[in-house]
Image 1 (cartoon, rainbow, N blue to C red):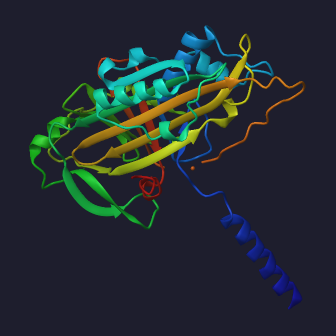
Image 2 (cartoon, helix red, strand yellow; image 1 turned 120 degrees about the vertical axis):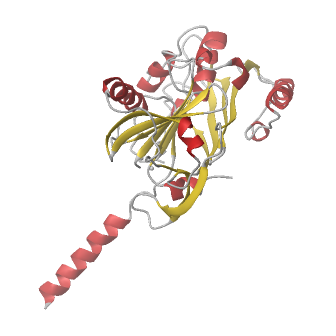
Image 3 (spheres, one colour; image 1 turned 180 degrees about the vertical axis):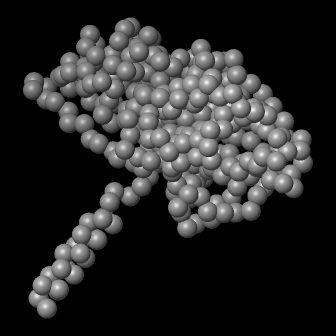
Length: 346
């Protein structure tokens, strides 16, 4: 009897360990090549834009830390995404000495260009001071599909018990919708991709895969499979399309980049922030992303080494957004739990 009780106790303890995992959350990545242990994750090029201006406009060269330069900084220094990968109408960026006047300049510019306000500027210190610089960028996209897709019945996504809203094309849909969908490849019911045409230069790619690779490798895989596909690329009258609504908002502070003296300067990064506000439904897509880096004077205390903190934020398809005349996307999202992601929306 004691052995049975002991066995039950062990099983209960094992069960408690199994269910005591870190809660799944949506992670925001600084690079398309960034690794993450989260099933749900996204990347947008806004933070790379401010890093580029930090390098070119303020540091005047690659960013290096006096206490050792981590791989993330070396990767950001490669400037794998630049303003050339976007149309000028879709972003605003600037940099300068931190001051109330710079804050006002940014607020006025994003209001005039995008009719937008900032989610981050008011919560920061804009007082002047030696070694204090601010680099800022906003990326804004708001586009419609050529014709609104049909709203489909709410249904479960993957293994989740919760039902989510879907849009797309079924047997009752107007066949005019078929023309908006281009089949990249269809290798099986678990391995396929389509491109959806919009009313502007933007293309929405949807790639169904269970592969858990970095975004740059997933994008390369999608392109490779498309180039090798010899089947029918037309979306036929018998085909169906089903895509979940997405509504997310995340703010990420890249604390691992902060509080390290930058070689050749008397300052360090004090703030490194990115926000992503993304919505997609049967009508189209809305994306607003801000990124900001603020520097401050270095403490330069002997022997002081800042300890980076780790922030761990955690399905079955990957999304890319790209302008049709550009060579790489400006946005990527891996979706594992739609209900979880949509809880972040505003």
